[in-house]
Figure: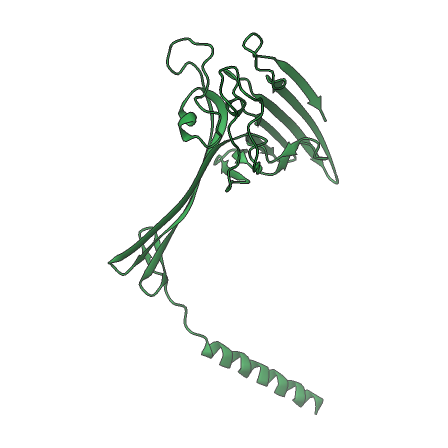
Length: 267
């Protein structure tokens, strides 16, 4: 009797599965029109999402050999300053949608955000102004209240057929295992994976001379280098951080407008 009960229960279960499967609608084919996908009856949509991250170093753009060339604005979101003399990092992020309905209706909506970034402006600095006060050229501080800002952005590319990978932008990262050095500061990093051995080298923008109102390449940039070996269950890693600081506060007098300083940190 027990055996018959088990067989009856299995039969009921199979019939239920078959009935549910038969009640399901057949999968509808997805139609494609160029870059557009059909998301509804005669409704086609195309998602737009791009990240353009650039690290630039431009000096003597006008060929006049003026050692005091500088960007024409201290405002981080000034797009005109992105094509003038500066050593800085800036990005352009776009997110939008393009939709079509039948043949006579189209919709195009695009949001864009571009700005200079360093280790400070990558985070929200609402109701803040650029540090340093009035600079050596008589320019007042600019506002840094972006309203909308991009917290993180990055592009990762793996070189086919090689152990190398490159990441450009601002991601949440740290150099050492304890996280003593790291943040979402913008950087350009190169990684190498050789089995149990992995290496990394990066250049990080902490303070940008563009917003400080300084001359030439008066930035705070630090370079990180790491090499790690996995000897499971243990890992051994050697890290070096080299800091190149050319800004020592808000004293921007014309007689002493550059202060250099370097440092090396081992972890």
